[in-house]
Image: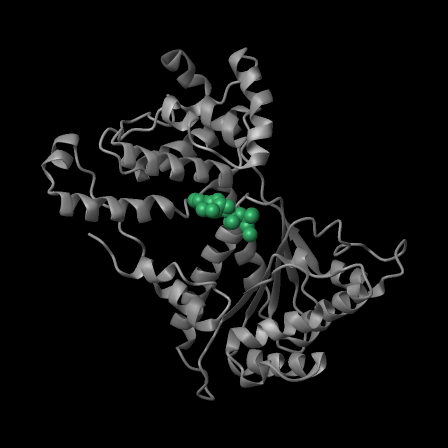
Length: 372
Ligand SMILES: Nc1ncnc2c1ncn2[C@@H]1O[C@H](COP(=O)(O)OP(=O)(O)O)[C@@H](O)[C@H]1O
Ligand SMILES: [Mg+2]
């Protein structure tokens, strides 16, 4: 019942090839069996502790759920990646996934990278014709204030290149290119690209650098970040004297991710589908059909304002509390005591007022009478 693999996955930063491969090849987590309250009571203290631990890990890692947002992003990514099989000397189109934090960019892109990794390995084998390890995906996550040299170094870190500690920016770049070529990388994903130092002295450098990568590396460049549009990644020349950025912009396709909304009937149906899927994954003895989708629909929308990150945090923390306290059910009362992130708390007040006055509802039409 307790799978050992997820435990070790807890330490992965996914910025090294070994980590990424471990992530890509880890089997899906197994949902702990749902016990009734009587069955829970009958467990010995030792067995209860093991059971609760497996639920703790399960609830902390619910997902990824195939939301419409994730499915749409994957479709678009497949279109672009599959149309990018020109010969290596032609520059390939780049992609920018640009949306606010907490909307599921990293999660959805990782799920895609994982599928892409498997497809490429299945089609082409674990090793290249030259006998190198095949790595269809190179993925690095940037952290605060990364310059160009740091970016190149992080690419070398991914490959575990011995020359990652000494050298110039250009040398690092050349070595990274060598790795990309020998491992036959097809997709280069740079997550949290907004951490690059853009507009100071190195701003031009960085944009030139992205252009260099897009031109020289025979890969689809997948950039992920917040406010990349504002950073000038897509500016079309003219007004800006920044030629390099304009060049990047022309060949880059921008993909967004949207929050859930409840203004339209279609939106409310999506929200309900999401809650129904989520319900199925909650392993609490007193869970019942409609626990989230009927009883807590408005409440959860108000608290998350349709942001999947906030919703998942709330459900995760709520489940932990329901297990710990023995409540074994998610209710408004219990969730009221669970803290969420600041941004969603601020938006919550306003939304709750509107929901209470019935000016707004998160429930699809067919569900309203029943729940009222
Ligand atoms: N499709 C999904 N299914 C389940 N949980 C998700 C999904 N997408 C995002 N999440 C949760 O929301 C949180 C924020 O997502 P993340 O991918 O980190 O957003 P971003 O990269 O846009 O800031 C994560 O902790 C993740 O658990
Ligand atoms: Mg992210």
